[in-house]
Length: 115
Image 1 (tube, helix red, strand yellow):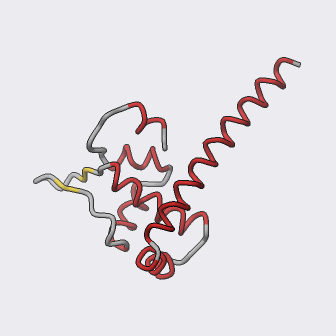
Image 2 (image 1 turned 135 degrees about the vertical axis):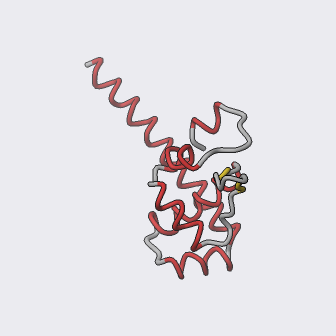
Image 3 (image 1 turned 135 degrees about the horizontal axis):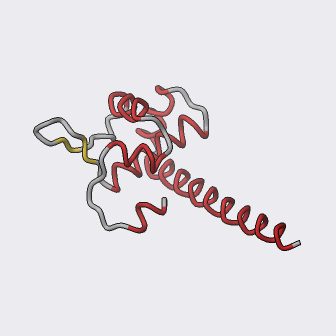
């Protein structure tokens, strides 16, 4: 999970925060919201989106399918419909592996500096 989410106990995140957490542009989040019925952030009277941690996990699933696996929108939607829990598990595993890779790389870099 992203460090920003680990370090706070926030219940809701604005779209800009989610964009930074996930690493995709605001326009991509808005597009995915239109295309994937599982992404439904709450909105206030002014239309401001408020995402929960659950919403962010769903966005990570979409990102995994579209960016990591390279699926088209229709194929990603079908995967989510037919194997929601499997996709969620894989997306979380990929996220953890990326975090481990980053940490290992920083350790290697630190070791290189010591030489």
